[in-house]
Length: 136
Image: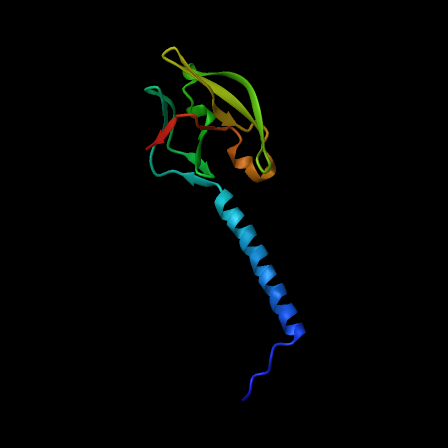
């Protein structure tokens, strides 16, 4: 049986199917990267300057960041910050600074007081950066 060459209609249909698969892959990839995972395997700690800033056996992981419940914060090390940033899918982030042994780590923790619906599961949770080590 001889094969026939692809017609223009066949090529257009094939190209449309490839575009559909690429769009689906892009959506699924974003979903998998941003899907929160609740970690309950071990106690996670946020440590800076020798002090445990937060400790919990139930953190939410999004984009590689552990979000600790606010109740897990050691409030003696957490101070006010008026810094804010915007995330396109989580909403407006507010920040805390850390004060440990007389040293300040400005805007080292962030949280979403009123997250967008896609990130509602991190409401009441705090994540860290700027040298704060997260370890089990």
